[in-house]
Image (cartoon, rainbow, N blue to C red; front, side, top):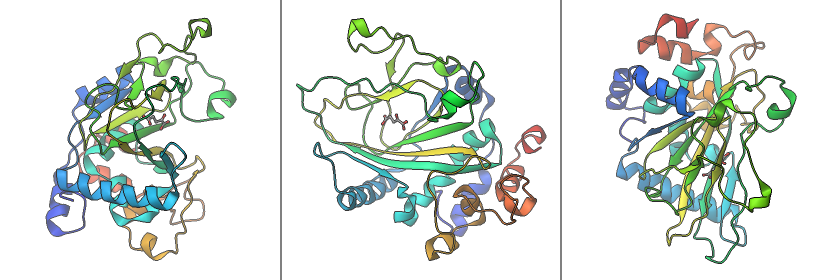
Amino acid sequence: MAALGTSGAAAAVLRRVSPPDPTEIAQFERDGFLILPDVLAPAEIRRLTTLAERVRRRAGPAEDGSVHALGFISTAPAFADLVDHPRVLSVVCSVLGWNLHVYHCHLDVHPPAPAAGPPRWRWHQDGGRQNLEIETDPRPRLSVKVAWFLSDVSRPGRGNFQVVPGSHRRNRLPHRPELGLPPPAGAIDVLARPGSAVVFDRRLWHARGENRSRRTRRALFLAYTYRWVRPRDCYVESAPWFERLSPVRRQLLGAAATPDGHWLPTESDVPLRSWMRERGFPPESLR
Ligand SMILES: O=C(O)CCC(=O)C(=O)O
């Protein structure tokens, strides 16, 4: 992967990544999501697609051929490359800061759905009980998720990620069940070429559309949150693959260097802070 490995050339690429353009962050704040086109090169997409197929076969697909594989990062080093992909991580850090980890990830494969099947209501905000047990309106952001598309969803009807732009500040989505299951007002299909990443606020009302195409949709999802939020996926830190990770990746996959490091981090708990400092993030984002 061009910008992902640990070679000298890759390290040089890493160093060149600077904070995202403020207009990108303003767009994210306004819409609740941001499309980063063509982040992965074709060879990277092919490699990740092969690995995703391996995960699908091992996981054992459901009756409709689909797979929803949780915690897939540990199954291949190339997946861990996505965790700190500089183009995407710089957007995530601009939104949430440096005290982060990936609390949850899933790999999804969705073959074409039967044309006759009824549409299903899948609209939701992420966060489970966070949406019931925190009393503010709007709810706090707490996490952002990144959808990496390995297949071509640049046209509607291909099992696209669907969103209601700007809905991240609304605790409720108006829904009139008497109308059947139409999409909510303002809903759109997100169109993305293979290798694109879509960063979204967990509060954005979103869903997966039906895949009425002839192509299988493959996508990888990584959700980032503050390190004081308990992870859903837990990795064995003494496992050889984990020990081989860079300090930033270890932080992002849940490690702390000190016993209290998830709550009162020292510099050694959060190498991501130096990562941001070295790349010229503004002082207010480093506090
Ligand atoms: O698969 C999709 O497009 C939607 C994924 C989703 O709803 C989620 O990750 O929470």
